[in-house]
Image (cartoon, rainbow, N blue to C red):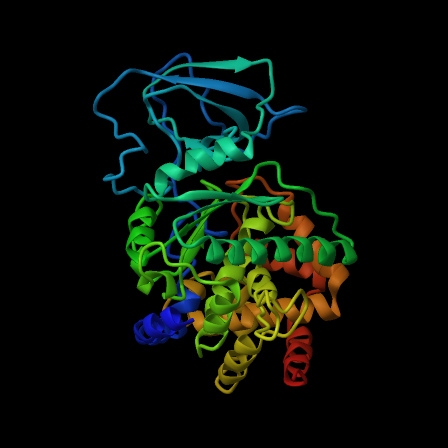
Length: 448
């Protein structure tokens, strides 16, 4: 404790600086990456490459029939195409695991103009083959893919971490970390508690989720610099974020948000009790823990059947679910309040927004994702997305489940215009949006 007390003084100074940034840009962290959480890729239509061995993407979504096709795609030898394994490469939108240096083997998820052929690999990554790649041959294999086991997948993910990183496995997660084991296990405990809580919650609502097909990989970096360097593989702007989940790679990434590990001498040990006492004593603790829970919720939702990876979900749905489950409880040793609890931070933000809320705010929330991406509107959008989700799950849970199922039926690349989004909502909750909005406002006003 004496060592901890001496070293934590510097930690608190650093943490106070982090807290200011955390509270001001937290709600804009997730949707900077184009493939993170439920944001969609923007790959252009596949083009005719003149290669007779390659089938051309159809103009409509073409789902695999019966068992998904397993394909082996070989590429022409080339020295001019950058491999995704090049750590210095700055990715374009729609970064994936595609490397032209070796065959790509996986299930055909869908074939359409947006993604070309969308391939699911044994590692659980979604790889778009747009038609611009120099394809040599495409062969259909007889066998289905076998998901990579947790140890092998974890060892593969270690390539993205500093050399000192280690693996920690739980029932559903593979944690790659170079923080202390204490901090890694605390995160792992949060992930597993949320996983079990979400499974129970949705079962009670009539939606039976399934176990993840692939181990859920989470990368926890010791410092922000290593985290930002890794994020460049997926998007630009990682220095403005505190964590993210990417639907293409299926990986979650974050770093030690407490700053404690960064000021301890190499090899120094810190007990779980001391770590939690320091975390929970800070003013920014609620937002830090909420960030961890928020990203884990996205990963769980897209791997248990609650949502479909790269599916067409309005951002209020994906972010509403994540903020619904991110509520914290600093009196609990885990830090999680559990499913269905009021999110105090978002309730405060929503009430502040309500003072100047426009009459068409609800309608714009349903159809305008940009509200979540713009710095001057993102805080209110996240708060209203949480509030609407909380209201619907408390007042209209059956209708909400029906709505989620309807959205989940769409294949990746089947995007919706504003009219379709409204029709989806009206189909589940009725078309009297004014009446629903009034009830929503009254409901939020009664929360404590």
